[in-house]
Structure formats: structure tokens, C-alpha cells
Length: 436
Image 1 (spheres, rainbow, N blue to C red):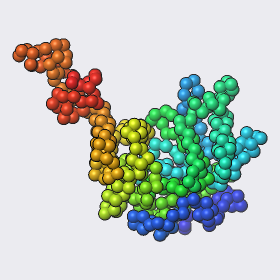
Image 2: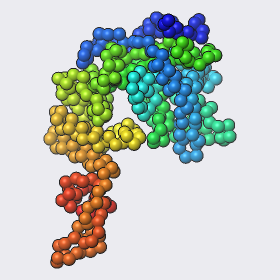
Image 3: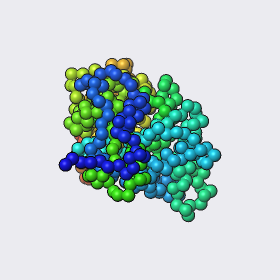
Image 4: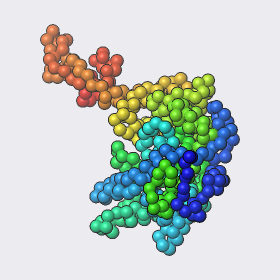
């Protein structure tokens, strides 16, 4: 006997066909250009299996901590309750403290969506949520921000003095990043909650229109949450193999099955990387460091050149490049296993920039390569300590042999670079580790 998917209240939940039609009509990604392997020719939507719905339910049932700065308490909230609360605030009337915005649907995006869909475990550092809504003016975006901060205030423990829960105080305490885009057909905003290293941050994205919603096929998945949220509102029984809601996923890359194959087989594919801010260069090298390989090896060099060109268009100054790289390392390599990949990541990035950058002058290219080398050296320094004999004068004065010998004692050199091997200068650990 086949599995029967029973909904708690069929009148209150959308049918599968209606859900698919709604997702098709609301998707703002409409390009038909074929990518590697012919993306765009297959069906971009799929109904999730029971195992995938169960994993989705586990993610949405997770209690996430939203850490506050200073004396603000950590807020612990179940993810599906956070989504429902934010949505209710958005749709509430302005007079009642809401934003007065109609939310079309809510979706799970990014690494968490990939984790739900993949057969094997997929670690993810952030929880990305998309609220699709009409945001015609800047005033609507201001209302959205106020509604989110208002919901955070409602989550604070009752004993917290209300005078501390001002919008400015809440923003400083709980918001790690806030972005607003309204140009060239893009109209969306982002509020990132949580700023404690080692913990997942929750990114709330409010989208009216967004031309580019993915970097690579493996991060192109979006899962509609409305039916799952409605299930928990109506159902009296927990999710089971014969009793679970119909949930629809979408790949905005274009072909759901192809994108899922790329995720399962750890393949890299994208289209028009020149449209991505930064070209997708940093994410591409992160995928390489994690064992992914090109889905179309014969096209990857061309894609690498586009990635490098767009990256240096968006970040032309060396200071911008340093800030972007350091932020990427800090935010996307979280946890012991991930941090161990940083040196490999920078080595791969160095190789791609060296081989595929065609848009820089020679001295600019050398500066960027030197920056990557310095960061790579620092990462190696942090992970591979070795003992080196101290040279003359490094530990307590001159030795024997007419001042040319080595004094007793050792210093710690942790990079094992050629400079340290020759007892020369190593900029990354000159002080206090390397005697040179």
C-alpha cells in the first residue's frame, strides 16, 4: 500500500497543483539561458519526500539562540515560532505595531535548504529565510525593520526593563548585519540576527524583486514553508510517515533534479557569474576546498575568468579585498573542521587568481597575490607549530664562535615558510614568534 499524505485540514491548505502554480508565478528568476548541463530545460519544482519533510521539520523545530551584545540577554526561540511571529508582525496593521505588508510566502534558502534535500549530512552555518512581499517604497522597508525589532522586543524575558528595548538598542544588541537594496530592478532588504561566533545566525531576507537569487546550483534551493507552518497550526498529531504535509521545493538555478544531482555528487555549476556580486569567486574556492569539482571541466576556466573579473570590479582596492577576504574566512569557516580548511581555501584562491585574472595591471595582481599569501601564512601559523633553534641575539645575547653562533634556547615558529626556514623575515609572525 502506498504512502498516504494526509493534511490536517484540506480546506485550509493549498493543493499541490496550486502550490506549484503559486511558486512558478511568484518566482522572480526568469532567465532561460542554459547553464552547464542544460539547466533550465527540466522542471524547477519538486514535491519533497517524507524523509526530506522530516528533516525540514527538525530544522524548523530547532531552538536557535539569538545572542545579544552587552547586557542584553540571549533570546531562545523555536525557528518556526520565529517565522510565524515575524510574519504576523509584518501583516499586522501599522496602527497595531505591524508593517501592514502582505506576505506572499516564506521560504527556507541556502545551506539549511541543501541540508534538508541532500541524502548525506550537509553542514550549514546560517539559517536563511526569505519572506516574499510587496515593498514598493523605502517607507515599507522601514516598517519591516520596525516590525522585526518589535518582535525581538516581545521575545525578551519579562524581567527585562522595557526602557532598554528601544529600536536603536535592539538593533545594536541583536542585529549583526542590515542591508537594503533598491536599484536596477532589485528591491529587497536583509536583517541578520545573532553575532556570536560558533553559533548559527538567522538571516531574514524580505524580497520584493531580486534578479539573482543564487551563486551556484548547489545553493539554489528554496523550500516553501507555508504548508508546514499551517500543519503545525492545525494538526493534533506529530508528523509521521503516513501523516505529513505536502511541501514543495524549487531550484532557482533552473532544473531541480540537475541541481540536486550536483549537490549529491559535489559538482560545481553556475550561469552568468558576472551577474553575482563578487563573481562568486570566494564561494567557488570554498566549494573546491570542500572537495567539490567542476560539473563541466571544459568550461570552468572561462567561468573562472568571469568570476575574477567581477570580483575585482566590485572590490578594486586592496583594502576592500582584505576586508572581504577576512570577513569571508570569519563567517564561512565556523567550527573545528571548517577552520582547518582555511589554508587550503586560500591556496586554491591564490591559484585561481594567479591563473585566471586578466583584468588587473601586473603590480595590482602581485599585490592581491601577496595579500592572499599573507593570509594563508597566518592560517598555517595558527595550526602547525614547530620548534626552531633561536638565532644569534634572539634569546639572550650573542653566542660563542665570535658572535656568529647560535645561543641556547628555542623559539616557536609556526608557519614553516621558506623565510623562517632560512631564519629570515616572516611578516605574518615576525613579532613575537619569529626571531627575525
